[in-house]
Amino acid sequence: MDALHYTIESLLFVESKQLTLKRIAKVCGVSEQEAETAVRELQEEYDRRSGGITIVREGYHVQMMTAPSQAETVRAYVEDQQTGELTRPSLETLTIIAYRGPVAKSEIELIRGINCSLILRNLMIRGLIEEDGETDAGSPIYRVTLDFLRFLGVNKTSDLPEYAALNKNIHLQELLDSQKNPGNFFDNA
Image (cartoon, rainbow, N blue to C red; front, side, top):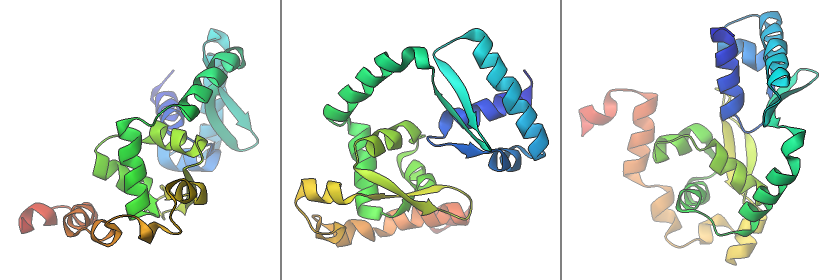
């Protein structure tokens, strides 16, 4: 495998949803044909090794998934994740979405300082958040679900405790703005 294969593999790993060949080509800076060839070769490599992960392609959509041979184990694990308590990182991410939402994945990761793909996937599986479009840069936007609000016994996110103060937090907004205009945050501090 070469650098293009590694890049595509990394993109598929961190993305919680399918990617189009067009998107892969754009991110990798190659033609759609080159992306398609690299995806096919990557699929063949994963099929040869018969591991726990596979790459699935349907038309122009590509996604990394668990292999069918692992379906029962993964199903049991996911079921346990859906019914168990939320972890601290999951609660932190859910709080950001509840108080800042709709909010882009890129902003969530900036606030938390880590990749949140798996956490977001788990919160979506539990039905607590949902995608609400994407930014111009292609970052998914998330919001809490009506089920989440129902579980908390509130009618809207603005009914959450201290919502106004946390939704418009000036320090957090300065951090997010500094990423749009690098150099400004520390210059103003």
